[in-house]
Length: 555
Image 1 (cartoon, rainbow, N blue to C red):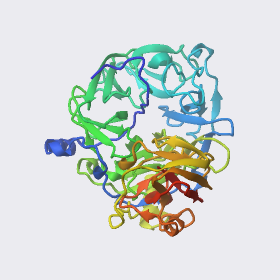
Image 2 (image 1 turned 30 degrees about the vertical axis):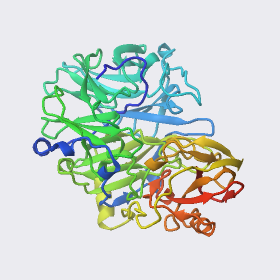
Image 3 (image 1 turned 45 degrees about the vertical axis):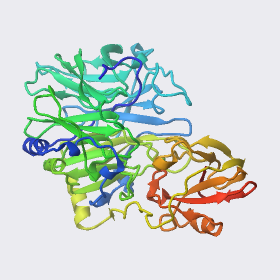
Image 4 (image 1 turned 135 degrees about the vertical axis):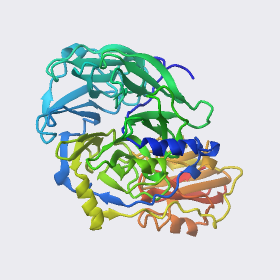
């Protein structure tokens, strides 16, 4: 396992969750080798818990930074000061290449005031990425994160972390509650995003933080002086021997009894697998082999905290891509108890916090618990239809409000039926693929996380493994036209009518001689109306193919 270096690029977001010591120890001791990290779709069981939907209750919402046609407000981080009412929020323009901004609230997040970004932060706060460039490299202003940290003597400070040139982590410190800040300086660590949570050791003498760097593992560093300096960076979780696992965005919190550390980890496979977790019973000296989480906790960028009654509220982006979640790609939260994690239970219920109008491009979350028990959940999200980009938005609630809605069966979303197996359909036709010449659109390789249509922002979210290396016709969502130049097989991805009554091309395809293939449904892009099946046909030279809205022509 290599140490993180200054040339590696990617993501990290630290999150929160917690679990009881005895439960996790028992579960870990009973773990068999087959229960350890096992890549594959079979790991994702159906969702069994209901979802309480508060996303449409706009009275809960506060827009901290408004997105516009030109401004993309992204990646917020918040902190609540010890007075229980002063909050700071930092965020960046654009998705990973903009300059940072700061706002302060004096009324627990209901109104916000601009805070000038110190001139001494230049050149760190000036972006070097531009649209169309790859992430990583020498970018600055990637994802500012704010913390309130105490040293062993009890002195508290605000610290803002960011990523500087060549993936060096940088930081600025305020000794006077945000009035003045030191210049941004490298802190000796390397990574691709700063740590979203920093945990003190049991003796209070050190702080621990975690990071990832596009390698198969997770790195841990420590500070003896309240975050002023950092050292002893080392890899603590290694999955280099497990094919197909790339761990990013780890998040750590202590168990209720203070004995154990629990780490949630995102498996960067576009949601194809469950999220992961690992535990440490010796204050971070060693960590267990990662295990898969349940369907209810499968998401990205977990950010949990304890509710006043001891339950966990875990905010995240929903990435459960097995067709059973009604909130795929949206900003949600999981509610349960810490022992649910150890015992492999889904938990009590989920909550749809905010609706994303841009698919999965949302949910770098921060959670704060106010003295009156109100939870303030903040994220970036495309808040409404239209040309405006993402905004920084918060929503607020209490656990009692959610419980009452569940009890009254008010605004409840039930789990969906899941991905259709299509096992009784025609076997997938393999062999020579046709060669097509588009008369509407262009030929592109079929690649995850790339655009699907020329006039929409949807990206390929998942694809059947049997279609690796194939091509498709990139065209407007309303129409696709092509002529066969070489005889062979063509395929069309489109939803079945039961999924999408207006968007399914099944009836038209069957009339043209296509058959539905025995390939399980898959999530082409977020939304259960976009769960697709595969249709297939052999065509001859000169045969035209014309598709309406909507299907993807593959060959």
